[in-house]
Structures are given as structure tokens and as C-alpha cells.
Image (cartoon, rainbow, N blue to C red; front, side):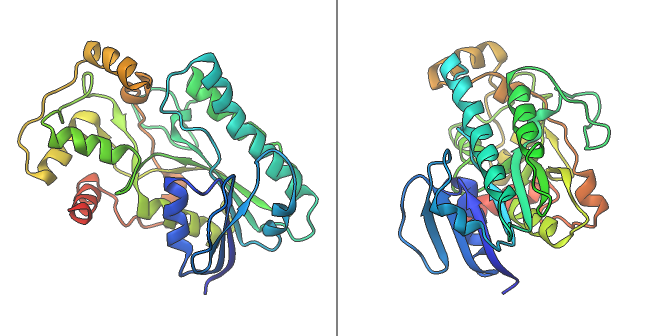
Length: 308
């Protein structure tokens, strides 16, 4: 075993499941902090917490090699006043709680990774954004990221290394954006969304998990790190790659006016579809990380081949 203990706070969702399975053969113990109890499966166990108050769950952090915080309400919703408040609260409060708990510990986690979002950068169609030269955008989703990272880095944890992993769109088999885009292709609706010129910064679920392990092993890495594949694509090209992998030559496009109606019907926000996220993983590449799936073409083929 490479690691003794990995803790996944709020790890009962899609990405938490990916990480738990990745670390299952690599760690003696994988602990998921969840609001709901679940039976232990092998070396993966669930410890109940409410993400608001300290309790017995704090003992689970003792001596951990790695704590990954995945807490946060899904942003795929309408940005009503109630949802906005919950999106921020569900990220900031658990982060502050974990910080207060770690601050008091004599054997805190060696590394704490907060999974944040690459959407913190501005809408970019002119040039890519990296950790050194990227420009922070404006609007609600950026404000969420800003306050989230602020609450993370303001915690006083001198014995624990901290990394804010700005994650791109995770491409996977079970959930997330890909199954939804794939379904559009299968229904003949897999054309571009809007003008199709918005960039999609993505990462295969396998690389998303491996990057956390890479950060754990490379102790010089801290602060902000972009977790996206090195070859983002424009939406029009990304959808074309899915169609090519599935053997579909054509897909009906969805113009902006139609999307504006569609997001009302399915309860989401237009920004989540049309914002251009052109983000590069400069620090990962500079540190020597080699992506398993650097190109969308190969990532998409891998996912579709497993789904069949």
C-alpha cells in the first residue's frame, strides 16, 4: 500500500466515488465523510457528519495522508436567491469547519486538497488562462469560487499543506456532463451549443484522480493548481469528437435563443453551457505530470467504449 489513510469529505457523489475506487487498492483505509450512513465495502468506510459541527468524525482525520474536500451543492440549477445562498453556504461552511478541526490537531492530515472550479477564470476566447497569468472573472459563479478559496486559504493549518485544485469538466462514465452530451448525440441533437466557439476545459476522470495522487507525492506543490487536460477544445469541436466516436456524421445545433428556453425547462443556467473556459494546467505540466488522456478524442473513445 502506498498510503495509510485517505479521507473524502462529502465524498458520496460522483467524483467522490471515482476517487474512492482509485484509492481503494492504494490505501489501507478510505474514509468517506457523508451525511448519510452507508455499509463498509472492503477498506472503504463511511463516517457520518453534518458538515456543520465538530464531532466524532474529527478522529477520522488523525494521521491521514490526504484529505480531499468535495462538499458543495450542485451548481446545475437555477440561480434563485435560495439556491445562490445554499451553493455558497454548502462550500464555505464545511471548508471552515474542516479548517477549525485541523487547526487543533497534533496529527492533522499531511495534505488537504479542496476541489474548487476552473470556472473562476473569466470568459476567455482570446487566450488561455493559467495559474500565473489567468484573470479572475466576474459574476455569481466566480464569486462562489472566490469565496470558497478564500475560506480555504484563510484557515490556519501550519502542519497541513493545502492545495486548491481548480477542476475542469470531469468526463466520466457514470455521471457528470458527459452522459448528458452523449445522449444528445445519440438523439441526433449533438451539434454545437450557441455559436460553438466557447472553450471546454475538461479532464478524464482517471486523470482527475491521478492528479490528486501526484500532488500528494510532490510535496513542493501547494496553493492553486489547475486540474484540466492540456488540450481544451471549442464546443463545436468537442461535440464533433463525440459524434465521430459514436459514428454519427451530423447533429442538430442548439442556437442561443433555443438554449435560453431549454434552460428554463430543465432548471439550469445558460452560463453553464455558454461560458468559455480556456484553462491550462501549467503547474501540473511544469511539475512533470503526464496525462493519461491529454486529448479529448482519446478520452471520449475510452468512455464510450466502456459504456457499450
